[in-house]
Length: 298
Ligand code: 5RP
Image (tube, rainbow, N blue to C red; front, side, top):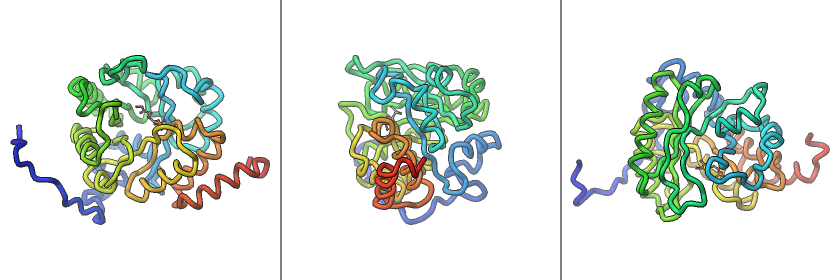
């Protein structure tokens, strides 16, 4: 174990220098992976923009039926055309998403806590790799609780999934959890994203924070950013623009899309930022126009 006394603070992130080991394949850190992994990653990240819009609707795995997610069978088909990835549980996807919807699927494979508990940090791996293969998943998402009570078991879960993923060339998305009691500082996010990346995931999902460009620079795989609690549409578009301009390779957004009064218009506007280089101001104008003229924008 490295001596923690007198630890030097990391500061040379070279945020303006592109990732160096990038020859040959467009997804950060995936250069040395095999064809199958690269194919799955290409289903997730658009090869033109290099980015992805994931629609997160996995909240039911610990929250039950959340506002906006009451009827997945109605919601998901409506939003699917405007996102790249459907991120949910196998129960939600098998029952509510027709296989004819040809979108990439990222399966939530860890579970074990519910919001009526105080400590959500204890989970297990809830899904076999066999079933992920049967569902043609492009990746498996595992929650990790760095700095929380359940850190050890969540990293054990993560490593089991990563190992199975390597056996069958299915990428793993490591999700950095932020609990009630956990800090949300740049120091925490740099630590957590880097630990998760060094375990061997192919993508990390985390949250925006101060010095986010340094979090991105120090993480050798693509970062996608969670939306978090519902905020005004203008602010959610700003969040998306801000993290993309600081190097995130996409968003994995839930409540700020499906809890919006205009979820389809929100998904379309997020798409413009993530894939077409729109600024947040332009995207908000676009959003308002879509909302104001629904009949012209069918
Ligand atoms: C929970 C998750 C959710 O998918 C995540 O929080 C994304 O949804 P939202 O944008 O609503 O925060 O990973 O751990």
